[in-house]
Amino acid sequence: MKIKICGMKYPDNISAIAALQPDMMGFIFYPKSKRYVGDNFSVNTMQNIPDTIKKTGVFVNESNEKIFEKCAKYHLDFVQLHGDETPLQCQMLHEKNVPVIKAFQVDEAFNFDALIPYQNVCNYFLFDTKTEQYGGSGKSFNWQMLGSYSLQIPFLLSGGIGVENIEEALKFNHPMLYGLDANSKLETEPGMKNPEDCKTIIQKIRNHEYI
Image (cartoon, rainbow, N blue to C red; front, side, top):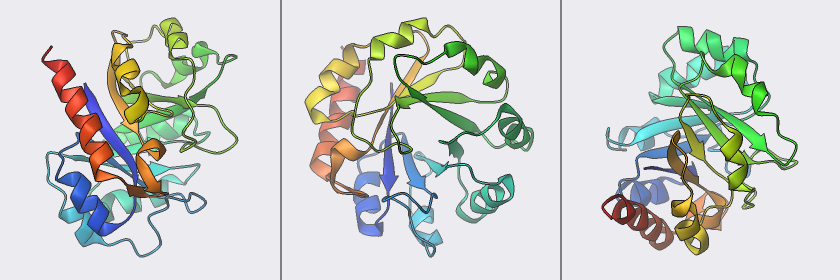
């Protein structure tokens, strides 16, 4: 089970969380987000992250030109598309060997057939809670709905995962579940993660794997 800590923003906090060795860390390049890394985000901050941690750039309805620019500047390992991006946009990135995580907001009316056009142009899917904004709501959806998901693309589970419900999240089983994505429930303020909470979640996931 992989663990992704998303919405990282501040250099010292990034270093502290990187020291806990999550599998992935997410950095939001969406200016309207409270967790936007900023216009002058340091390249050195990213370079100091160990290579064992996959750096994921999160974008919302951004042009591929801008995405390629950020990938080159920050040496991103993954691009997470968290908006209304089309299969064609994913395909264009995929053809340039940019690994793509496509996020979808799930509610009771979600149609899993909508994922079919994306299945050959994405490396992973991410299922988050449907809200008026793009992610970071701290709210969970009914994870059992994912029983309707039958494609062969692995996915990350997101939406309101924190210390108080990590045990419940670890009980959720699906053959294509790749990892858990945690963000706002681990924060003391937007973009500032609580190292103790992050440590607790990472340890519980690692211990769960050896049971």
